[in-house]
Length: 382
Image 1: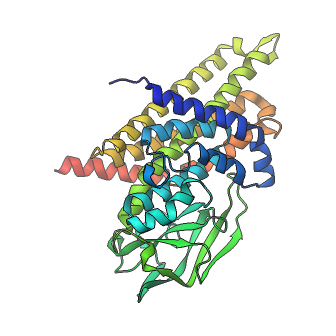
Image 2: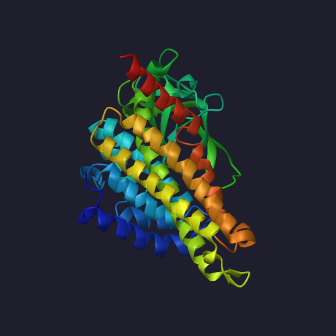
Image 3: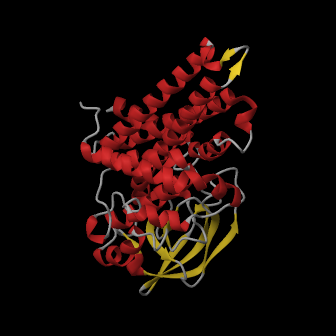
């Protein structure tokens, strides 16, 4: 067991850190304040391979591993968790097409997704099907060489902006076995979008409802076989959970660094805040919990790379622990800044708003506990 990064991994990490510091951090507050979707910065990230990190190389991907992706997303999120999280979602949707799509679909859609000439969204959640994702009601009915979709998807990152919507729709009976994955392209007849949502955070990416009204999509756009959609969606989420946990780690790390600098510089009662033992203990605990979260995320990523039978459970554990702990680290960093942490001239409040949603999306942390418990109890009954 070697916890050291190899030379390639250090190179990925350093490249991502340099890019984030130069192209993301100086602009992140403005993107948040003005709700700007930073297309140019995203395409610059794609030029480094960050839009298809674990997509195969024959269609423009980088062909890297999930552990490499975790390292990259931590660095990107240290500058802007919102933008890093969108890149994560784009990677997840692209990987699903790469892993389960046929060769014609891969070659048609993925090169432009890998360059971010086109953007991708993941469409699972519905107004009446959130945590109970298998109860989704968006329906796709076969009509010759097309599917006709009716229904809607909620809280879709990139909604109205993306070019490809990787959508789970019901083609069969109730339950997970009746779900099929279909790549719906922007401009499809019957595809429309709801209003842009006003959100607490994640303001550098648009969020909107995706609406299908007799939306005609070629059968050639199906990802995998009919009835495999729920399985495909869940496999996509394993990697998405690692990525969003890594984004939480990056954001929390940035806030810990800011808090350390603040308490060294700030003086009260005639001495630096860093001289007070209570605050020393606070930053020690923050650093310890952040390191524990990073280790869990990297183990989960390595498990997914190795196709470990417990990978799904470990991804759920890592996502639950990291997103909870990292939000608490950011909250404590804000507390250590006092009133300064609450004003927008300091970045802490932006990280706090952005990281809060990580405990909800890619499966709520309550559902992560369900996944872990089911695996543990099934194992104990065998």
